[in-house]
Length: 479
Image (tube, rainbow, N blue to C red; front, side, top):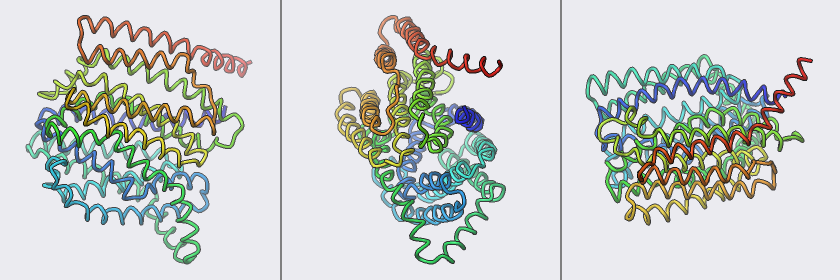
């Protein structure tokens, strides 16, 4: 049971982190949509989209390698930290060289804010790295503190700069930058990352070329398959923004981005879990009962998220009336389709941990390529027919194809029982619910409510054996 306690402890800390940051983010969404036009909001989303593409590529995904190697070799953690920091510094220069490309029409005017973009990229890259290092080094308690301080700073600055001073896009960039810089400062000082980096640099210098080579090469070998994976993951999840902007305009991209905020709740919940789950999966990867561990965790997580998906689809217009202000409210019918796409993304991410925990990262890339190709093919085909809804459907197809591939192939490394007899019907019901909601057929609310009830019933049956087992274990311990 030790592995479950460790998972729950880490999960609690990461949950605290996400609750603080996401609550503030939800306060910010109505502010952004109230004081920015759909075009302005679309441009800020474009900036975030481009950063999500460039970050893993420019940094060579060294933050992922740092986590894996720090967890496995804590004695030499300073060396891994130093390598990651140096690579991140180099990535800022690389991004600065690329900024003239932002003048292209597909980026929707991002080229007018090159300086702000570089600054926000640098702050995002280092705050992300610091958070990953803290997680791997066991400084998990510091993460929610830094996230809370950062989010609160961003909120205060956004209220002042966007709502009060009407600075629009510049106010957005400045508020995000201020929050990230403060979190970095806390990580460097209180978290000791500054001293770890300095010590690691000294060790690498004294060890010479051989030590540097022996430190960098294993990290690169681990991270290299994840780099194209990150590219194709971005293509599969975000390239639709570029197609929408190029084919329908930046305002349509803004509506698409606004609609994605509510389905993002699924990713938010899973990201809380993922941070803790990765650590547990890495630590337990050599244990004999790892398949049972995976089966138990996946059944519980998938039951929670599929039920939440059905509930959010039913409540989409009411939630949107609170979160999406002005013209962005018109995007609410897209929410139900994006919920299915995000759910598929969460599931393929879970199966992806099978490869990262067993050090078989190459297939992560291969499966993501299929999803990216699907998205690139279907998005431009469906947009002329369905508009922005076509991009939503293409995203669901791409994510679903990756999920199917990983669920099938991952059995070679960890073959666990995912409870398919209940999960497959649940997914089909969610697809039907999303179609009914998006089309807004007569009585869609009642039909969607019935679908929600069926999902709850199926998932309840699926997890009852797990609950019974847990109760029996607790009663045995008390005796």
